[in-house]
Image 1 (tube, helix red, strand yellow):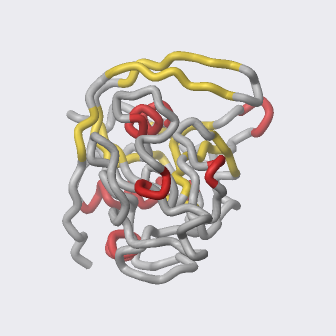
Image 2 (tube, rainbow, N blue to C red):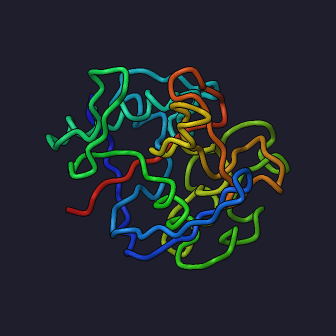
Image 3 (cartoon, rainbow, N blue to C red):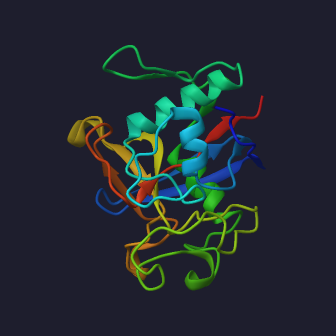
Length: 221
């Protein structure tokens, strides 16, 4: 199947301060220039690459959801193969390896994700929530086609709301093992939960839900 064309946006380098309310910790991360997809991965794109649609809500331009973290990184590897570039993830062992030097498609780190979401500001949202996000008060109980709300100033859509997004990072290995980080809030979340700073985590293979999807990132080189 032919992969639909999709764009990537260049995000400039900078720094971001992350915060964990559970641990009462704050830390600063330097973010190198990178590429990120302006839209969530759609069911059309997922079908073209993975050969199936796992989503609860069906529609070509709806975000793919009900995918695990492993599903998402497998998609990234397969997308890289479609474009004949190096895969970032080693899926041959139980402990999935990641090579940050490869030029293939990958999930964003959580620092990259929050930095891109805030788009050069320190605000927890990049606009009035009803204008930029699908969430519990306006979603009518389902996902919506990607890119139908206002983007942030860097041209990224649905960074808040519609579906949560898998990031590449392990949350806290000493407490939660291999749990990975999810960001952004979804269609079923109350307003107070849809923030650029909200961090959650879940199991990388067992957790699949109808308000969790992903977007892809890539090194600039």
